Image 1 (cartoon, rainbow, N blue to C red):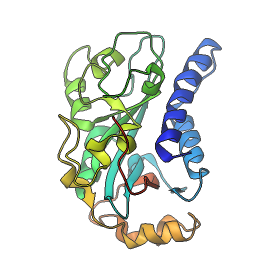
Image 2: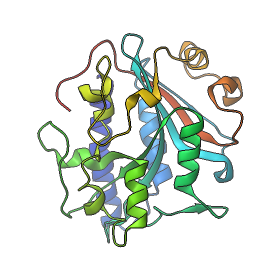
Image 3: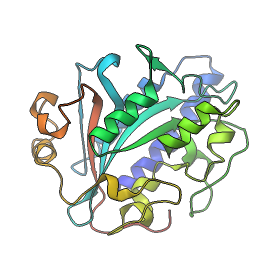
Amino acid sequence: MKPYELFEVLAGKTWRSIERFSRNRIHLGEDAITSNNLDALASAGPACVFLEDTRAQESTKGCDFELWIGSSYLGWRRYAVQAKKIQVSSSRYASLAHEVSGVLQIDILDAYAGANRALALYCFYNHSTKPYNWNCNLAPELEQLGCSVTPSRVVRAAIAKHGARNYTHLHSQPETLPWRCLLRCPNFVSKGAPGHSGWPSLAENFYPQLPAALQRLRAQGGKISFEDLPELFNSNIQFRPQWVGVVDVGGQSRDGG
């Protein structure tokens, strides 16, 4: 299975799991979804390698996970990702304006991303029957919105706008896409990709080569610790991701997206 196909599988699984847990009145938190999805990616073979910082605390967490997506041919793009799970009964994201020690979580995410040349994203875990826009060039597949992504500035605008912290508003924004687009769409993964309309320039988070720390991570199959990756993070800020992962898409871009 190609990495983008696994992202598609996990989006569908997330969509169905959220609906099932809600129907059965069993709590399913965003941390559990993140852990399950990243574990599935880490178990997929050499194309995907992940490492968890087991020391992570909310006060020092810059984002939930960091993704490096690309290949030796295409170069690499660095994404700092904050996850948010939908509240099925209201189709709202209740913790979108969450604060950590009096600081908005989105401010921490943007500070972390800016200091580390990453693109700050939100990843939404969804199931909803509410209206939405389909912004991917491929044929609509509702379950692919089980995991959707959008730049942090879209979320910042939603936080500031009354009644906008919900599935319909955020999925009506043209920047909001299925997360598979990060691996499948030529606008993200082709050589010299321009990025999707409305997204920040991908030049801001482009790396021609994978940093040596992540090369070591891949060579050792994830069997190192965060303490072995000091050069990966800006030492001028305390924030770190809870997970960091490398997803190799191979030599060429995929169709559509």
